[in-house]
Amino acid sequence: MNRILKNVIGMPGVSALIVLVIILLTFHFYTGIFLNARNIELILSIVPELGVVVLGVVLLMIAREFDLSVGSVFGLAPMVMNALYTSGGLHPWLAIVIALAICSLVGLFNGVLTVYRRIPSFIVTLGMLFMARSMVVVLTGKRPPRPDNVPYEVFVYDFGIFSASLLWFLGLALIIGIVLHRTNVGNWIYATGGHTEAAKDLGINWRRVKIGCFMMCSILAGFGGILQTFRVGGSVMPTYGIGLELEAIAAAVIGGTSLFGGIGSVLGALVGVVLVRSIDNGFIIARIDIEFFRLALGGLTIAAVMFNTDLQRFASGLKVSERDRGG
Image (cartoon, rainbow, N blue to C red; front, top):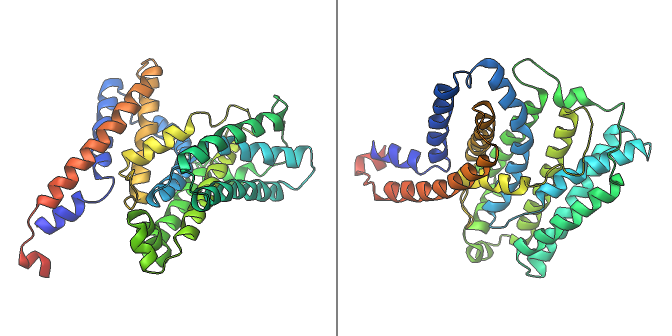
């Protein structure tokens, strides 16, 4: 029994799941409508965009790196996409592919400077945050392009209580989860973030692993921005994604991803995203000043780290009997 309890408590995101249940029930009892079908539909409509970004952030944090530029890349991808098929005349699907390819180059730039020039990823991506945001403004000429003839339905078709964007998010989460937890690539990522020197000794190309994580993080951030653009009918504003990088990191940390690398899970990412978006939505329904959302998010991030630490200590202190080990 202790072995099962120890394994469950030791899973990243367990504390966030407990907090999520408490918050959902609290908001429902306070508002009376929080858990009704219409509001659940609303929450599910805004979860995928942040969720896709958080998947990339978690992947990178497991490899013990950060990307502060995801919010700017979130705004850059749809701007490039729209510019290509409105001004450039390209087919919408080709415009989407090229936009995501540019995002991958942003990640490649971040990764190469971090790995080969040994510049902390915090500094590199902070610089990219400003550079990418500047490119977003330049692309629009401070006026958002007006797209037409784009494949909205493929990405945001309304199935009733959820849209196609949620299926994209869950599909990506499933693929990344399989890669992280069922393949050698996942083992390399955890090893690189958990103990780089040991990864080197095992022959793991840790540089390639980190650069790959940077590129995937940027691609997912760009795809999240494209999803939001399609959800709101194709309108793109230069302000898209501002502040999103902090929400994404907060959701990752709340979901149990370690700031020191080597620990994290897709399940924790899912819980963290739903938790952040539920608090945001709950404050609006309860008519609480939205500025308190940042207060709650900051406090929850700190509390999540402390709660995760306490749970890990409790789990490590559980004694497992010989019979449990044999079972």
